[in-house]
Length: 346
Image (cartoon, rainbow, N blue to C red):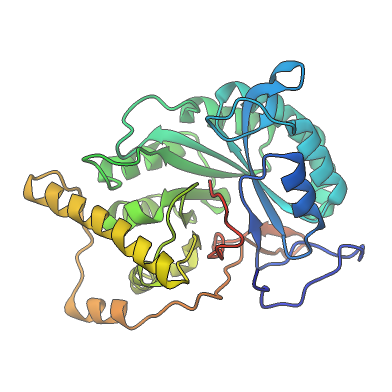
């Protein structure tokens, strides 16, 4: 695992706080994974998945697990208690089951004063609207998830995304997806400064236009582009192209990447194969009139896209110091990940 640019701090140091440049562990859903994350001084933020399932002889309790798993040796309560006791890592809680949301939020609310005094940020994440290739009801719906979060844990930031299918005729976010999300956020009066929209980087590359629309519709909001659990690494050129696009639109400070970058020749070859599949699907949709909105660029915009290579060691802040001395969510989301770090992503 490569080091973050700043020097590592010792966990034994009582003044240690999560650094502005985050190093993530993803899908931390077992006692062993959590123990490793809490003893690794380079890890400053933990993401984990939550659903209602079995823990030992207990049934229908909130556990840390990613579907299709239905059992775990780690309950949400133990996960949270250990993270709070450690006091040095930010938390991103990815809810996969609506039934688990309220009991978990109540436990989180009870521990919020300690989380706050520790300087630990918390992001509540869920796929809350139907998205490309998954135009069906979401297990965690916007109109249920958001009101609960705002009522029980109003201090926490929200990370909202769309349910996705792996392959299909709609491999891109549409203007309708963006406008539905923007409308829902306005309806519930969500503060853009505490709001991150999470979108697949490959689906976003196909047509970034709707996500640009969304950032315009929800002032102050942020966009996180990710690679998913078990997904092939992406080429650095993909990230460079998207960065250049958002920079040209004056939005780069509102966009972050949580992606697995291809570093070896084998990974680059695999990424190219996957990207070709997505490109073929894009042309198929174009020829048959199934494409959505597009971002129109001038020739000089295209030149800028080619002239902005990405350094694989780049880090982007998830939080930045507030004027009160604490930590607040940053407009930059999270950093590109190395293969050693991202064995599984949300």
